[in-house]
Length: 333
Ligand code: SF4
Image (tube, rainbow, N blue to C red; front, side, top):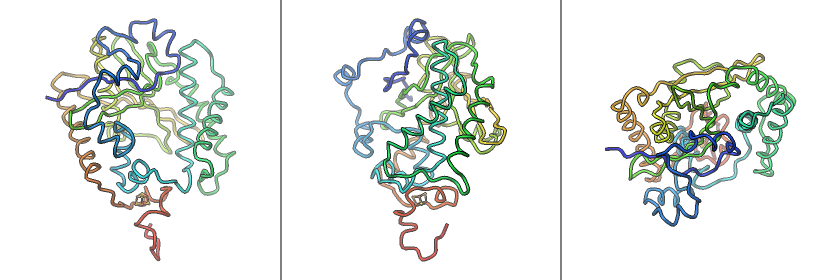
């Protein structure tokens, strides 16, 4: 039988404090408390699978981002997480997505505190996050798209954040329980914990809602939401005990903001079996566990072959070091 539990939070949400901590939702009776990191280390033996992950990647867990990078290209996974190679550039989409994320995070933190957020505040947070990401990799320039400049990027951010601020997604029903929470779940003893960085958790009388924010060139279809459902289904595992403590089902949603002249904000619900029955939850847990086990087995076995694809390689910041391209007379992609 699959054992699943909500693990310790690695990074506290900023000032989810006032309302959330005063409210029982933040600490339902059978939700694990948040032990001080040192205390947890002293009392909880580190699992072998977490130690393996630590040895391989320097982190005692796997994240959905790691799993998805490995599935896309094992060589890229090795560059990023194992060898920690210096990228040749920072893809604009990565820096941009991170900065939009940071602005939305700030918005919800202020909402939680009852503070209004103007467009200027959002853009200030966007620019600060952009700057921070550039400073993290000094000397590694941001690579813009063809014919794109920083002012284009700033204008796009203004339009997108304005659309978000005016959308229903900016006024979630119910109470905010967590913002940018880092939670872990143990799917099975032979697997490292899975780390989830949950963008937003809210509670309504009928559900505990887990939300992930995305930026996208085009609108998502319901099928695309389902294709990407694994991420949210894994995240659902990390809040499962909290949901059980509250006797609430978990609902999963993507909030997608499009990078367009007139950005659209979509809220897409992601179906998951855990919401309907305990049997469905067990089945879903089995599928998730097997999916993670497949990837983890390949990582452990040291698979690091290049898997070139036009989609991935055209924006890959490791192309100049990649065996699929280094030394090629004609560039395959
Ligand atoms: S260039 Fe392509 S094949 Fe090489 S690491 Fe990057 S994504 Fe993988």
